[in-house]
Image (cartoon, rainbow, N blue to C red; front, top):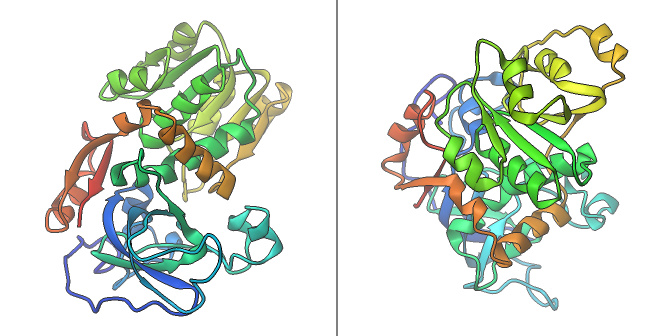
Amino acid sequence: MQGLHQPLTVETLDDPTPGEGEVVVRVARCGICGSDLHMTEDPAYGKGAGDVLGHEFAGEVVALGKGTTGSGNALAIGDLVSVIPLQSCGTCASCRAGEVAWCDRFGLQGGGYAEYAVTRSNQCIRLPRSVSLDDGAIIEPLAVALHGVNMAGLRAGDKVLVLGGGPIGLAVAFWARRMGAGAVVVQDIADYQQARALGMGATGFAVDPADPVGGAERALGGKADIVFECVGMPGLIAQAVNQVRNRGTILLLGLCTRPDTFNSFAMLSKEVRLITSAFFTRGEYEAALDALDAGAIEPRLLVTGTVSLEETPARFEALRRRTHDCKILIAP
């Protein structure tokens, strides 16, 4: 990053050296995430000049620091890994329970927009032969979506409405159908991702900006049991309150750093549950990998292109505008 509101640039940096408990990964693929776009625009994310973005990455272990060898499951040079981008100590009670987001040393791992990245060995998950490095770079958004579905308490037969046809929304549709939802409708303001949503498992797609509440109900056959807000725009919580059934659930996955307002009485009168979801557990990350390892082809539909590091700044700027792309991978 050059700084907020500045385009990305490609620069030459010193190769990283692993410290104690660290490894160096030669990055093979790194996804461009919507939050990366926000990080270059919003000071709330704490990013600035000199930071290297990229938290959805996979690659090959090429250097090992002290304390990363000797155990039964120790990493080795040449291992292909997906990196859990939640920095953690690996030894505290939260880490041992797989709740790495609540580690006292928690932070968001970056560095994937580069040829080499340094990370901690406890954040690396080996990839089985059946899972490609492309797959390794989409495990993180799949885990984010799975955590949201788990938090929502989805039950077999539920009617599910997903607001937003981006990568997270489509991943939610995948998990919801996989976990037994009776109907899953993705709602968006444009139809760019309609075919992809249906391929991911959605049973319907709603595009009706003039009547979003009615359009979703017609597509879903009534009010939703669960509404997943996967956009992060002011006004969508209020919309979701109108779209969910009495005693239904609204699950927030969209990142919104702007103030929002909604009528709490309308929510209270329906006894709606409003739940927030952030990050994921290690078990959910491994479950996303297991789904790919078991042959799930739907998540691979998320990837719509691959670019080099040199091409990344231009494609990054293009993604600030609504395009037909879904998930773009960087191949350093």
